Image 1 (tube, one colour):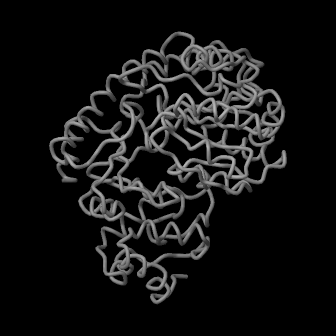
Image 2 (image 1 turned 90 degrees about the horizontal axis):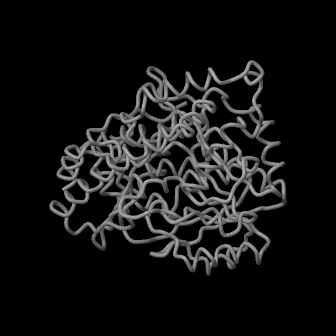
Image 3 (image 1 turned 60 degrees about the vertical axis):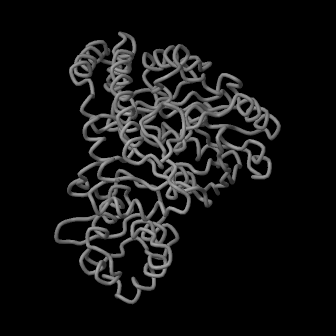
Length: 454
């Protein structure tokens, strides 16, 4: 049943009028803290816009974004319904009929999907299938196809300086499953909390909380996570994005890398190193993985989502020996192993150099797009200061002091430009900024988007 009007005025209007926060943000908070429960049917976009005295486009954009994140479902003729009360979006929840339509989509979620190497992937799929024995078409090993684990171990050692052996590699259905397996393993071993970076990806926080861990945020500065504050967090596990912090784009300083490993040893703890896009560096080689400093204390995590496509659902972890059996057991109980044909194809792509060739092509592509975005910002919006190293698929810009970045996000949405406010990623107040993804737009389209933002 649709909630009554006074409820929605009381729920959203004070925050909107007091700080001009986006409808999207207030709805998300209401869902996360349980004020809007699973199954609640929301008003139509027209009616809610009239009630809150905002444009209908604002509400439509908010609904579309929250559908995409899995908090809401929308079906023609059935309205918009809350589907995730404070939980992580799962593949079983209803999907939107169509993705939100933006004139310029600068969300940092995906690589250039049009650059996916279709011909090479089809060839790798055929070769992988041809190379599988009849027995290998049965239930796959829970930890992954042996040939792929060997190729990944070699690749990660060569490209990311990860200390590994094939038996340490666990193949997962995307990085999300890897994080879920790690969280459940921590809980089974008696952990009750974990530290995370702030600002950081809100999806990581939701995932960890959904598996029973309380989350303690630790601030990030120009040199990465404040390792000196970890002791005060009172936890024995931490999740970090050391090579290219998300979203700020800074690199964990060498002294802090060593301090992080020392902290883990001192508290008998663990570090999960999310190496989500370290292969995309444009002006220098990426620093090696923290995992190499202590393979028994660091769980290394990566995926193909930012290199190939997230729709393939291919991720991996390099798991320390004391955790290995428990992680593999949970993987087996969860899904009886991942798609062996995808794994065989990916192993072929790695073995024949197709993955490296694709990376070389996309690095050049993304470098041009990043340069186009920064060049346009320098001309059109010179007071917006880029932050972070030349890497990844997004850039953070610091807005002038006193700017309300959530209001900027909302105003941009009015003009069909999808940008994300830095405030969405931070659990504590910090300077205003925007997180701008550039991978999916051509240089000309990026320049047009910046002119629209101006």
